[in-house]
Length: 332
Image 1: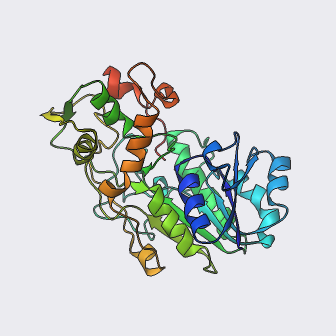
Image 2 (image 1 turned 90 degrees about the vertical axis):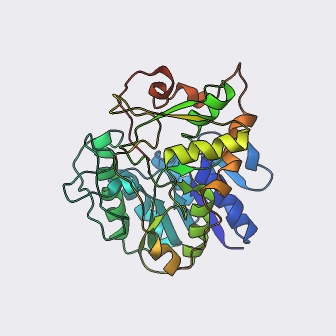
């Protein structure tokens, strides 16, 4: 059996990748701060802090055929992997489309909206490392680039995946919660600005997992965008969620709103070009509508009118429900 290690195994990508790899004959080890209980019977689970050098050594010292790192946010994180890469056949780092910039140097976390004037491919200009903290809007993408470059320069076989708006069951920030909670509470009026595109390309964890399996045996370095076959707008996403939950949202246009109205509320469309992924053997599991049901079912299974999920405390969601502006955290 080929062996795979997933650093950060309890999120959407970790669950989807572990299940797909296991189905394809891989022996899978997951690491996380807490044991991924839903996978205990099928996978080796190790409680380990990816950013602790001693615990990382315990996980990686035996080598592996495949390493997937979901928790590599900056150059220092990538440097921690370097001593072990010679014993790992393929390393896949989960990066982000937040590294890409338009002709004015604006990116998906900029205060002023990026306008890429068409689908973003892997030759698009990117941010440069800037020394800012990775958990800031201006530092997130710049630190991801620094981590990418550290791994690509290592001499090991490395693939960089650049997804956009990751979704799936067990997502750490399930953006569809904005619509699911409204459906639960029967708050069915959706505000939108008809002058804004409201399109920010989603990436299903199941589609990311399909690309991972396609790249697992490829030698050399690759930088690959990964996103769903389609890029629905926020209002279209609300309609899909509503249909799954048996409700109909009522759209209400608002001109020049003072805040973002939903998580996909963008001035210009942000769409990824995924031709390179297809050229490397990737075949998507499904489009947006067919891949979100698992996440919606997971949200509903963990929610009642009296008990909302733990991520409800994430300040990201506050402005969408309270109608108050807030500083948005970095987009993953």
